[in-house]
Image (tube, rainbow, N blue to C red; front, side):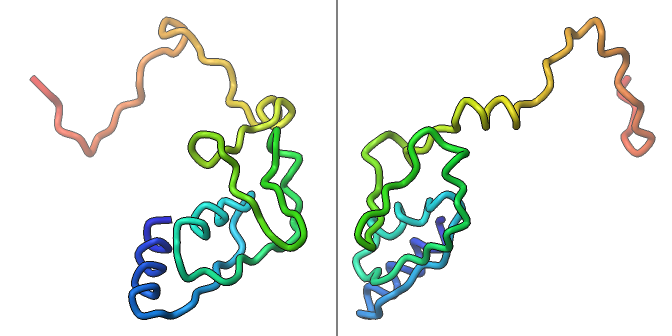
Amino acid sequence: MTDVIRIGWLAAELGIPVSLGNTFLEIGVHMAVALPEVEWLEYSFQNFDHLVETPIEIRNGFAYAPDRLGHGLVLSKAARHEWARPNRLEWSKLGPAPTNDRLPLLP
């Protein structure tokens, strides 16, 4: 995102309109509303909407940035369940860490 914003502001200083390519879950809508010279935001219809509780709203050819904190996307309960990491083990059940021969031994 940082590079897009930097390039977008450079283009704005030169009066050059920009188009933003497709981004996962339409995160690009946030960059688009932050830059003054964005004319187009690509949308590829890959339909990742099932991964979030409330997808980015797209209506009449316009994408609307949510007014929620951050990027405004919250993983759906189903996605959180499917992509969750395994349960953490207690330290006592982990056993010793593997040795690394490349590191010097500490006294």
